[in-house]
Length: 280
Image 1 (cartoon, rainbow, N blue to C red):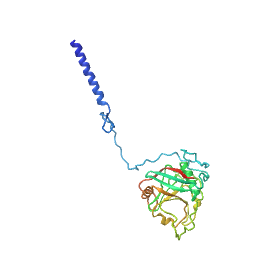
Image 2 (cartoon, rainbow, N blue to C red):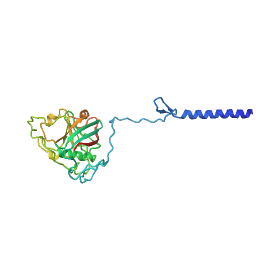
Image 3 (tube, rainbow, N blue to C red):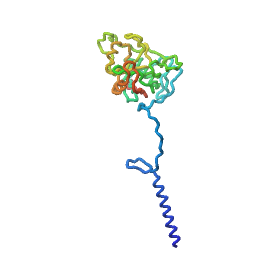
Image 4 (tube, rainbow, N blue to C red):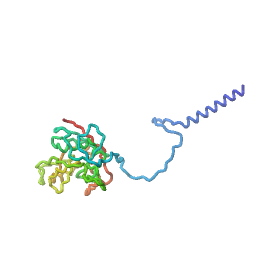
């Protein structure tokens, strides 16, 4: 009987020890609901650190290398096309109004675009946005007190990837946007451009030369103060107006070289442009 009792006692002790070991190695819940472990955490060696943007460089579908015939994009397409053989067909209503939300690495801003006032430019922008053309690009020209400019997948304002054999600049075509009112002259008496205006960039070769026939995909937003210069060289198609998030545009505009337009500290990425029809 004593041997049996001793055996039972010894077994109970062994079971207790095993239970205690299991309990000590199991993750424990803290008061906040998270779990911790009493096991020593693995250590890693720390390598050199670099200063980068707090926003990761976006991953995008490789750029199109062959021009494709333009067709209105299927609803919700995830395909990205950046090179077309000619200007887009009519893809929107003549009197439609659209909101375009620009999702950038500094925040969002929204622009309202009225097709009735700038049909070719609004139709073009909606067409490109629906083909995800602008996604993953960045604002390559930033001039404080003037404009922030984007819309070039090549990222250099030339529309051609540096060092490539590309012969036709993105988006592969030019179109004629609406010309500014005749009242916009070098002796301007009325303000044609205003801060927050969304405007087509073009390749005018001389100040004051009306050259809206070279519109493509590049655009700019006028910063406070920029209207002074633009109103003296009214050669650019206005096709929208910032209706929310102007503070984001101004934040982008603070970090640029005033003479070269090159972003100084960090590239601000245009992660995505979402267009939505708000009026037929």
